[in-house]
Amino acid sequence: MPDKKKKEEAKKGSPEYMTTYGDMMTLLLCFFVMLLAMSTIDPNRFMVAASSFQNAFSGVLKEFPTIPIHKNILVPRMGGDEQNKRMAIEAVRQLQESIKKEELDESIKVKVTDKGIAIKVADPIGFDVGKADIKPEFAGLLSEVIQIVNTKMPDSEIRVEGHTDNVPIHTREYPSNWELSAARALNVVKHLYTHGGIDPAKLSAVGYGEYRPIAPNDTEINRQKNRRIEIYVEYVNKETE
Image 1: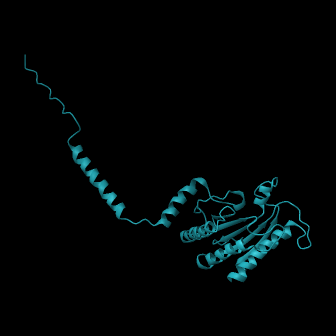
Image 2: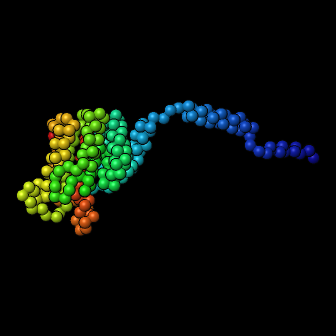
Image 3: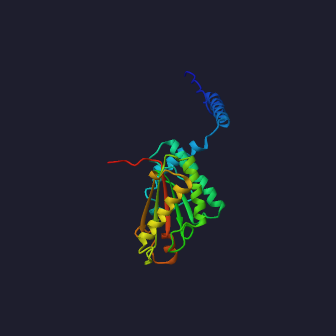
């Protein structure tokens, strides 16, 4: 009988080419790590990119009164170019620093919107009850707004909205909450013009009275939330019909 050829035993372990392949992958990893270490990341660009992804899933702030104000700064997904978005971020950061320094961060909230920035000033920072005279704390915030508008957002338009609770008011000066809310918004607009020289053609005042609450008027705390001033600094031109 012919001798049977012994079958060659298969070599144990990984193929020989894997050693070279593994060395090449390690060298590539080291190369890209070195590139990353030597690169400089622009914080503003990183924030714009990261927030864009976030807003793609979470949506944008459509209407200020109906969405809670958070401390996080979100870049809008729609409206304005990248430069405008960066200016809005910088403006909000500057305002938040001043608000925190004055320990008013519980009463004054600032937010980036899809058109610029929005500022909500809750009672009693803005005005005394039943009055439309601007209080000193509020005047200090308006000075910050004036500086930001003149330096960072000079082409923006400013809309001021006045809101009250549903407690009736019947005074000689303010027969209803409509007149009171409108007077407060108008005084803010006048302050921005007289103290900041902002073009009056870019300013507008609206009084909504008690008819756009952000909380039920069933408790004093909720009524205090509804007594507020909202300032919108918008850098995106509105579409005309």
